[in-house]
Length: 312
Image (tube, helix red, strand yellow):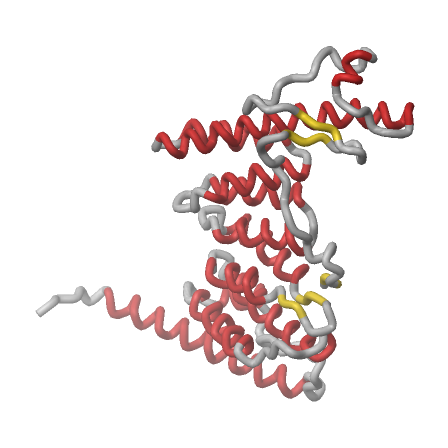
């Protein structure tokens, strides 16, 4: 038999009473809210009648239960969403879904699962080539990065939305890099971060990430992989310097030089460096420069905006 001190019963009773009072108060508030609000129409947002900023202090330590309730309601609502609908037809359900997830994280800002749901469930494409839920998901995920800086999934999802849907490679690279440094983050995240940052033009940040990851690598294969990435970042810097010189040449002559050696002969470049892997650099008719052996650090494929999708 387990003996329980008599002083434990008042605490248990007080907690149960507080919880019961909170539930009763929420029920009363919902009842009065239902009486006062106009009849529900398709475009009206269905949200808890008890505001999150009021629910938090009245939850008496049970805020996670309230957040779980709206979270489960959001999951049930998500199951009702159809894929073959237009933007206008999907909008009422999408708005309600966003409000439910927002309510969950406003009541319990530490609710990692709700942030993940926002990043994976809110953005979706409709049959009329529009993407709904992107801006709302990004807003919720930014809150998640602040509130749960220990969960790599949240900045990773935000980085994906920023890179693919919003075409903001600068912010995407920063969030991928932030996610890569967190415990249990997959190894590919750091490589993705440096590629996105290089694509966006932020070579300094990409190099800093690569140097940090190389120094922290415990296995030889991982160190070699990061040292290779540092070589590619050095190569990208050289290519951009060469492309800047080619651009000035094109402004003066109206076309690209046949070879980069012409820039050296003309005194525009002191010399043409050898590519870090021992290859050479070639210049194309459009003024772009590329190595003969390896690919540049670029993102391949179109973003949602480049594909003609209308992002909301």
